[in-house]
Length: 377
Image (tube, rainbow, N blue to C red; front, side, top):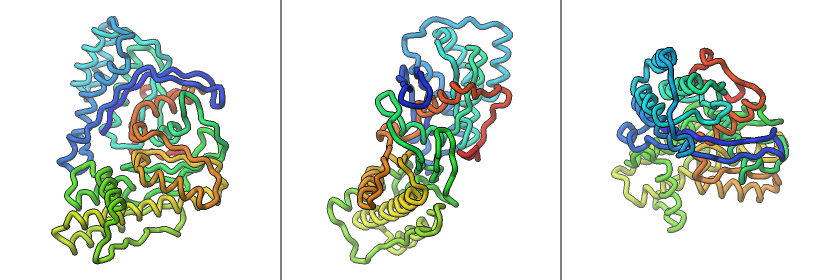
């Protein structure tokens, strides 16, 4: 439910000589619009992306490329064909061409999956339209690769670290442990069998009467409970799901356990909400961190990356850092700043740069939305 457009300048191959700068960035969220549905509503997301992409592009370009873009009748027809399912986007793009000239770009990177296909198609068709207008190639970027690449960056450079690299990717739609023996190579060690971690946070929030997106509010309640030392007269304890079973995750049973506690204490008092939120967050953190440290030990990870929207969770970040030290593991921890933990186009641009440098382009007609795309693909 975020629409973003960024303009970056980058130079160098993967390694110490690589550098980048962010020249412009536009990002908008639809979260408030989806609140009444308790989650992302695909057709609404598609409509809002079509409304948002051109304004975000204008923000990214700023004042540098003010002017106009000449467009032929043939190009107008081609644009109409590309954006026939996004007429509002076509209207906005037509107005954009009257105000902006072609920017000095070498490639366009666009997310093609995984995600909700109606929303993905808007971005893909927008990329096709810009590729036609600007005569530059397209790079198809895996959304989850963006979450791996961004934490590797620091102050316009690549952080110094060694492989193997273990990535814990935790978001509203994904929970994965991914091993990289070298840059750009990914092996999924484990993934969620049902609800992702972020999805579980939002669903538990809904049970407690907290509107979408409820994950951050659950974390705030849990933090308050720890600060105040809130405990329950009736002890609340949730089993840590699949704690010792491989590297896959499952949070649907935890969600059911929360529902039973909620039903047993209806109406749920404010104090009980604090208790439930704390135990729930403790449970999720225990599972994520335990499996991550076990995988790091088994595969000899030199660095641990945490990416995805849930990586903004202060408790999970601090607990992982603390337990890495306690375990005696000397793996380097790489986490993006909280403001870049959620979905954004900077991470797609950075991941796309390395593909573009290797001439890993895709023909526009071959570019399609892949909702079930795997990082290994």
